[in-house]
Length: 311
Image (cartoon, rainbow, N blue to C red):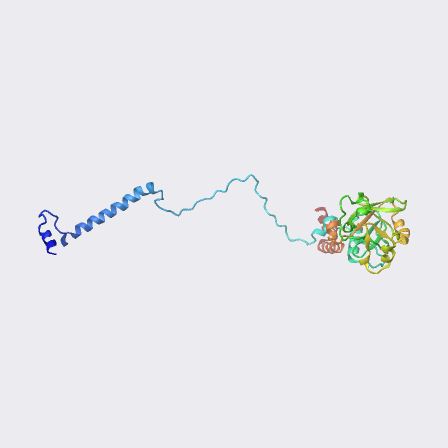
């Protein structure tokens, strides 16, 4: 301790004097001026050296979308409220016609058969030819004359497999090469024609390319019990053929041959996996009748004619 005090006493007399309290304001002012100058200098040269923006301003701006090679979309036009007849009248533009229906002569028939027969008669789809409807779900055949009157109905045998389409090229294969799941009776609208099979028997071709025809039932294979299947009340056991429509011989000779005396006729085979409307592009005659009655009440024949001409 004494050494330290001695060293301090031996210090030269020209060393800086200690800061006195009366000098503090000078240093405070100098520090403030220095800080202000530093801030000003940073604002002037800071953006150039740091790459940061000098200030952020919130100003409105416009976003320009890139050009598109496609033309602008057409505006969506909402049609005014109208009578909701929709799709069913797509093939019946002349709605001023009186509604026509098939004549079942009191014979019971499933609703799907009645609707299709009514549409065929009302629309004129058979083009003045006799026609037949095959109901695969119930394994029945309905035959109509050219005027839409029922000539008769009978049970039939159909393809073993469930389905509405034929396998491509199946008509060119021998029966022994047709697999069980390929033995379908195709659904659709067919223009039939008369023909003969390999044994010389007369048949009605439904789909020649797929080798599907209507013919008399053959009981050559006793194990298949085709006659017993036809006599059964249940349609579940009527699926046995390779795709052809097997008709009771008496019905074929007494009804089908007479009704289909013309070179051609129309055969409608109802689907079992799709809707009839999807297959035939048909409409509901009952719905057309309701629309006709509504338009008649709104404005009479003149309004109906105007609506018809606009379609």
